[in-house]
Length: 272
Ligand code: ATR
Image (cartoon, rainbow, N blue to C red; front, top):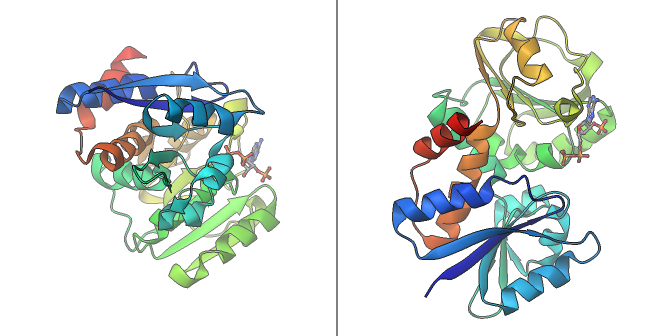
């Protein structure tokens, strides 16, 4: 019997998740379908309930519903609890709803495996302290970097976010004008790229061999990526690999099978 999955968002028609999961299902011979469902801004819970009642077994959740999905889940993984946001729901047979957050694991896998950039012992700079940033801090700090600095336009938010993870390693928060020293990995988790805006970053930011990673992706380089190329970053990447890797983590949670991600990343790059 075909199992049903979906991604809920608003807007959601641009989502690449249906294509990604269709590829994963084909590759691993899973009998499932996966579609994008537009949830009204004031009726996320009802829309998910209707999907579940019609036989849905799990879902991805995207902007702006990740916090509501956290509330909806009756059980959470540690990484979802740390993020206080859920991007993956699994509807269990006993009626409970497991909430997971696979964004950070997807980011870590893309950086460490696909881009072959080890994070352990490295100095990391995380730009932004909103939903996208807070979703990835726990998986990043569990990779044992030498240090994580979180820098944000609103410096207080960076300090508060860093405080949440102090027990796991060396981590601090600051404003953009307080960034000091050089970094091996710099991750842009702000939404500035979406608006085509440049961040006010110091000119000397990158250590030799450094990776600049933008969690956004598009047809062309984001402003952050273009800036990084001309300011000494050795490796520059967008977030397309993270998108596919977080999907693979969700797929694994639902189906217990790990799909091959590289062919799907290549497929998406070719389709742009
Ligand atoms: P998301 O879920 O995408 O993270 P969010 O929670 O609204 O969205 O957070 C947006 C992040 O991008 C924040 O860190 C925000 O900085 P503030 O906390 O100061 O608002 C950051 N951001 C958005 N536009 C920016 C810009 N033009 N320059 C710098 N930072 C920006």
